Length: 101
Image 1 (tube, one colour):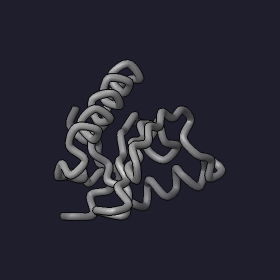
Image 2: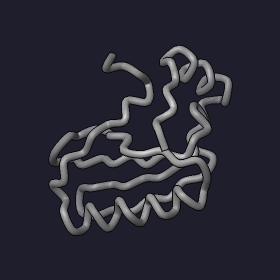
Image 3: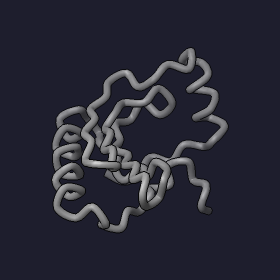
Image 4: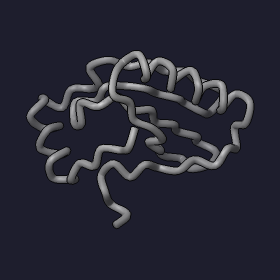
């Protein structure tokens, strides 16, 4: 799925209007200092997987988005397996806030 770009202002306003609640649904796996989290966040309402490696980036990297929960479940398993087998795999942020342009 091609990343759905959300303007930072639109995402902030959606997040604030949601009462600053966390994700509606969330799947999380931990491998040492690596957290793999797939959720349906309140700011974009699009399933996404984020990975946080404390010893490498030290911050969340959003690596993939999904059109539905079924594909999000497959994505969570895929990223968890990849981080288990290759924890140094280079991650590329999908730049869903369009901040790198």
